[in-house]
Length: 215
Image (tube, rainbow, N blue to C red; front, side):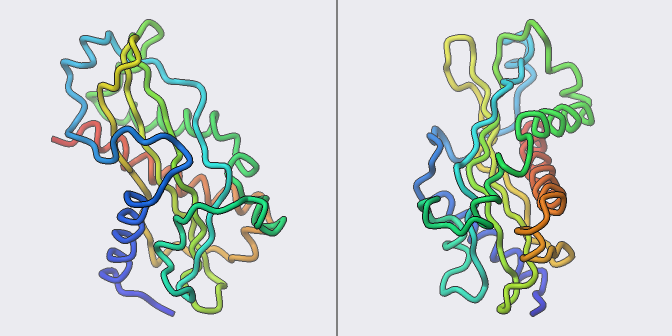
């Protein structure tokens, strides 16, 4: 089954809307970012330190265009005990060294932005924390052969008193008709799952960093 770009955009929007209306396993302070990261805040905090621990969901969610509500089904809270062993094996913490991969990607993307190149400092008083709020595997055809991982993340900055000073809100990768992984391959091949999830995480963090700098 092929999709137009408009169809993919609509489904992506539904995914994000569903996440905003669905309970999350991670605490939610604010769903939507309120603007770019001001230079004045970076000066006030004397830069940022990156929290070494990334909060992750306990399970990866599965959905298909063959279901009655694929976009919303992708984000429903599930009991990990109800998953097959193959599905349970796709929990992100079993696929990736999440802390290391996330930090490497985030640092690289911040370095690519002139305004953020010196934002990360050892003596920074702001703490930049990442939360992976949802990881999903969406089958994009009715036979459930072609899949794309979907990921929703947020980046939050708190001061040394723990007050939230800035948030990216929900950032995510987008459905892309050019990105198709074998659904069975993702369950059976850890290297393939690592590649696919890293790709999704990379795109989601790109979105988060863009929110730091966009006017």
